Amino acid sequence: MEDKKKKKGAVAGGRKGGQCGDCNTCGKCDELEQAQEMQGFNDAVRAAAAIERDSFEKNLARQRKATLARDTAKGSQVETFSRNAVARPAVPGHEGALLSHDGLTLYTLIVYSENFAGILNQITAVFTRRQVNIESLNVCASSTPGVHKYTITCYCKQEMAEMLTKQIEKKVDVLQANCFIDNEIFILETSLLKLSTPMVLANQDISCIVRRYDARIVEVNPTYTIVENTGITKDVIELFTQLDALGCVLQFVRTGRIAVTKSCIERLDAYIAKREEEHNSFSEE
Image 1 (cartoon, one colour):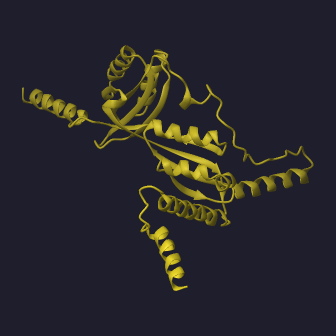
Image 2 (cartoon, rainbow, N blue to C red):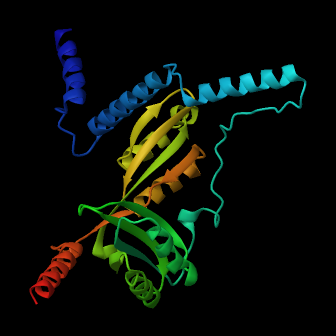
């Protein structure tokens, strides 16, 4: 009897602690760890989804209910409200991130300008005159005081990209403009995906895809789950495509691309230093 108990304890201990001696062949320990990790992840999502929150959806529902009651009391035409909580797959050819641009390269234009009103209109007018569509546009203050940075992406040929860069650089308030392809710069982009919480709990493949792309869940309630993903443009689009194929995406939004050059020097700093040197030499004369 004691020998049987020892034998059972040795088998159980081997499966838990990986001491059975067959780890290189059976793989039971890896499967057990993966199942436990996935179970813990799903339990955390269920616990967060069970918490009742005063969310935007509830406030919107209360507002619609109050509007309906007021319209009914006035005897006017009553509008029936219905909450939009149905996941609709993207239509091929109508999703901006998935359009096919055969024979064209995605160029990233980085423009530095002084912080004056109307500069953005002048820059976008250059693309309008050349009939080039802007894919994304990001504007922010740069590290140089009084200078703003524009990161613009567009699909075009090399000759057109160089022409756009020269036309933008001719603007009086533009300090510098350069165009790059993807392997010349370091790129990041952020996206938010609104997923249906009941579908996330019912389908474990959704949580597996989210973890595979190192995305993180930032909000969970009984109605929807918000997932944040930061990475290169390709990974952001692939995550959306795979989740959209499962029919769980309620909303999807992407930020504009942000980019820095891979060169050892900052071109704007070199340009400003050169201008200061020319200004000082002119003042001495």
